[in-house]
Length: 66
Image (tube, rainbow, N blue to C red; front, side, top):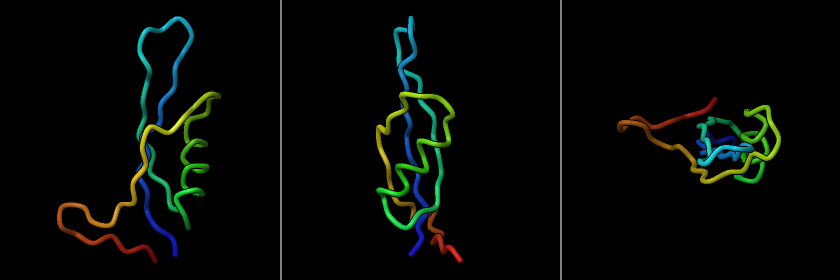
């Protein structure tokens, strides 16, 4: 069953002192698949995932994918 995931993407760039981050939302059948999809959202090499979570509720509203 497909679920909605939120992923925190990280990337270190040459000559920069701090890592940059982006948030990606993806729909996938598993966390493993969501990780692959999330990395493709940032079109650069060397992207890693700092964290990933299934979103089931937002502000008390249940998320239902159809």
